Length: 378
Image (cartoon, rainbow, N blue to C red; front, side):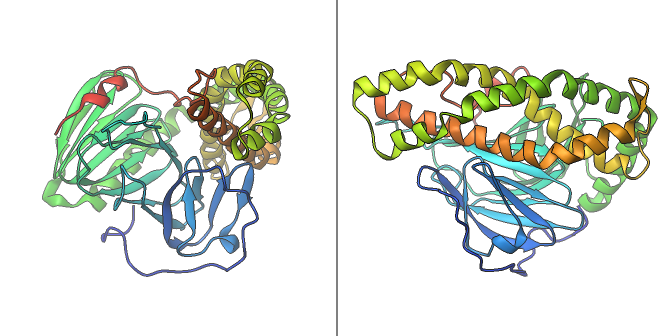
C-alpha cells in the first residue's frame, strides 16, 4: 500500500500475445485496465504471465489475478452487479471474483463476491443498482458494501484490516459485526471481537504502514507455529486433493461439450450420475485446500526472508518449502481448473433446471454470520 493516490492512471502494457485458452463457457466480469511488474492470471487450468496479458483484455469469473513484489494490477468490473467498480490488487497478492447466478425472471441485480486469497486490494465501488450486493471475503472476515471506496489488507497472522475512504462497509467476523464509516479502519483477528478506530488525519498510507509493521512483528514471534501448522495441513490434504483432481479432471471435456452443445434430458441425467460423485468429493476438499496452498505461498515468501525457519518432523523447514515450491504452480493451476469445472456444472444446472450436486463453487472459510450480508442495506 505504498501509493498515496488510489488507482493511478498510467498504463504499463505487456505484450500482445494471443491467449489460446477456451473462454466460450466463462462469464466475463471485467477488463484489465492497469498492469505493472510481475502479474499473472490463472485461468481454466492455465497460467498466463505478463507477456500474455494486455490492457483491455477480458477477465472472467474465477480468474485468479496474482502479483509478485513491486507489482500491481487493476481490473474494471463490467458485470451487471459490479459495473463501473474497480479492483486494484497490490504486490504479493491474489484474488478472484465470483458472481452468483440469478434465477430466471429475478429482479435482483446480482451478487458479486471477491475472494482475497492473500495480500491486499484497493476497491472503488460505484453506487450499486437496487438489489445488487458486493462483498469481499478473507480468511477472517466478510465485508459487505454499497457505493464506497475502501482497502482490504491481510497480515501473515491472518488478521484482516479494512480501511474506508468513502461511504461505509459492514464487517462480519467470527467475533461479531461492526460498521466502519469513512475515515475509520476496522480490524478482525482470528478470534475476538472486531474493532473500529479512526485513521489519524486521514493518512491511510501511514496508518497501513504502521499496521503492517505491527502485524509482522506479532507474526515473527509465532511464525514457526504457523509454518508447522500449515505444512501439516498440506501434508494431510495434498494426496486427497490430487486423487480428487484426477477423478474430476477426466470429466472436464464431457462437461464442456455438454455446455457447448446441450444434450437431451436423458443424456444429461446420465452425465449427472456419472460425474456427481467426483464433483461432491472435490466440493468437500476445495475450500480448505485452496486456503492452505495460498497461505503457504505467503509463508514461503516470508521464509525466504528468514522468518519462520523451524523443523518439520525432524527436517529443516527449508526442505518442506523446496518441495512445496516445486508443486506450487501445478497446484494453483489445478485449483483454477477445478473452479472452471464447477462453473461449467453451474451452467448445466441452469440449462436443466436441475439440482446438480455441488453445482456452485463453495466459498472458502467464510466466517460464521456471513450469511447475514445478503440482507445488508446501507
